[in-house]
Picture 1: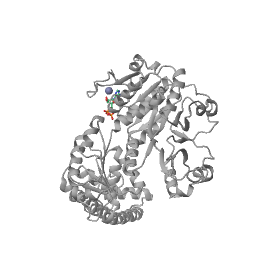
Picture 2: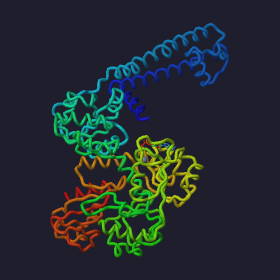
Picture 3: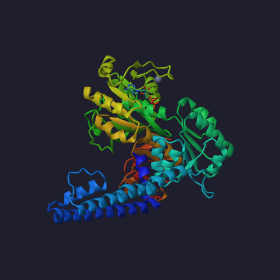
Picture 4: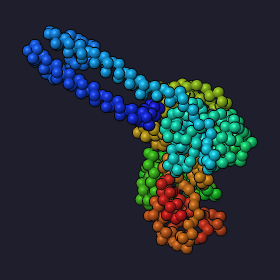
Length: 561
Ligand code: ADP
Ligand code: ZN
């Protein structure tokens, strides 16, 4: 659809736009000609032959004659009439059948084809270009990244794999280069040494080649998405500064959110000793009670910093009711999470998780569940040739009978992770329909499908593109930040000097920026102060850990610059 729009955009640019105006004027001229003929036809019919026709009949007669269709249902029976009809036919042939197509071809079709044939994507950047990010490999992840970069006004250049791709990208207003990514002359023309960062999502072998070539030219940092987690080491050896095993991270995110067992294993990420974890409430003794009633703080010292319910994030209040559908975001230390684990494990029953799809991501999720000691059943329509670790039920995961036979009725968690979003939506809907309690975590291959997956009944949706783009943006911004989901994250900022010495409630951080302070890390004390009370005095030199949306984070940066 986007490609069609990009092609149509040609007709609204430059000379084509002027020609379009010409075409409109010509069509007006034709229309007037038809009207005039129709009126003359009416008069002639009346005066010459005494027959009366409406103006609509006149237009109909003119068009059938001008286009040489001539049905013959309305005809003149007098010589002046014949002469008029012949005149209309001849002008129809000239103005409608010859000049119009000729104009269309010479003014629109030919210039459009010519532009496509003549189009040469630029092979190099101007000599003064610097501080740009070079993006190699275009897919959903890098497209989401480009959107984020456009929002942040970060200059970037995308390297297209072929002419058509370059043409389509340029038509979308992106800055494009076309060349062989592993050719040093091309890379020099792309001013790789002056670039701020290089991002590659080309596939591991080509990325390795690219990194090696870049390293012969310059020290510009390189961040890459590793197709296979086992290749991370090789990619680093080849010169990549950051190799992100995206499928393993996605698998882990899915697994973390599909099970309630092992709070330690729910850790998403960390800031030093401060861990951020997410734990689904289903199956825990907390369901149906308020935050105040479960007194998690008193029992474990852990702080609940957020609640997710069906993709909606909220900052919890003391009277927030904990539903079995919700997911708690916790901040605390390793020991505190172990204390929670004991609390939950004492009371919760056995988990069983179904994983539908045994590709790279499904396999990573299964390995993670395995490490946590959670029993699982893998279903895939084919054997995974790269995995010797797991055995999967082979069959179509959209088949209810197959899932039933494999014991899905006993499952408490379901991970839907095929590479086809339509199948994922179908499976989510079918699973929700037959088991209203099962915890469904679904993967969205395309961002557009996140809402449909929630609508189909998923409790949590992880979007490949959003996660990948967020990780890459953090790398580019050199930011320590934890991605919770699209639209929410935890990040660290040094205490703004003008807040030093104030009490937390006097700083009005939430009122001014919308961000909430999750913890304060004081350089002297090793343990972070989690969920600091309002009267905490902010000491100079400490770090704030905050939770908020990217916009709120921007507000924080602006307010406390
Ligand atoms: P990734 O590596 O990103 O996880 P893959 O394309 O390798 O993606 O894996 C997707 C997996 O989903 C494949 O193994 C494919 O066989 C499986 N799959 C797709 N549709 C179905 C289905 N209807 N039933 C079972 N498995 C499916
Ligand atoms: Zn596997």
